[in-house]
Length: 168
Image (cartoon, rainbow, N blue to C red; front, side, top):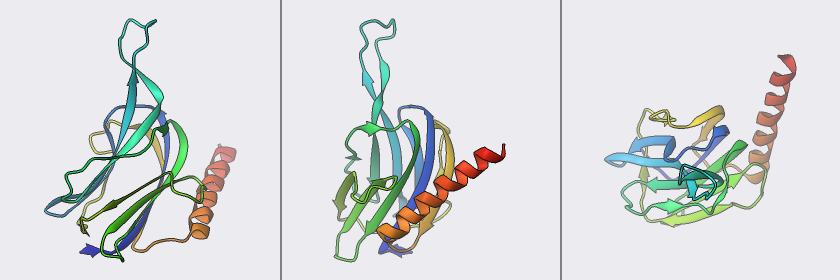
């Protein structure tokens, strides 16, 4: 099924920053249509016996369809409770992928791709089990959602979590 637009929202409370943890895999495009992974920054700590320690600043990597390019987000704090929204719009003849963090109205990361996406099933979350996180929400739309809709959903997820925590 050829995809023109979509929005994916995933809420993650990343408990431990791991390298190469696969958040999302969607099959299609002869093999894999979309893969989103985490990449922890490795920094050397002179005071540690282990020469490699993982910093809080990490990045997300996207691989899109048949495009061999590895797309890396700018470094940001990946640990903690965050809600990411990814949008894809191919209505102009090329794909624009944007990532939003929580309720921010501007994407923290955006890139263009010439690859057209074709989705299949099943969608996989945390493939390989490398992410040490609580998955709070996963929502996929077959259209672009507006900023107001996105903020409403983020507020809903955050309020639901607060209600759940109060009832325990």
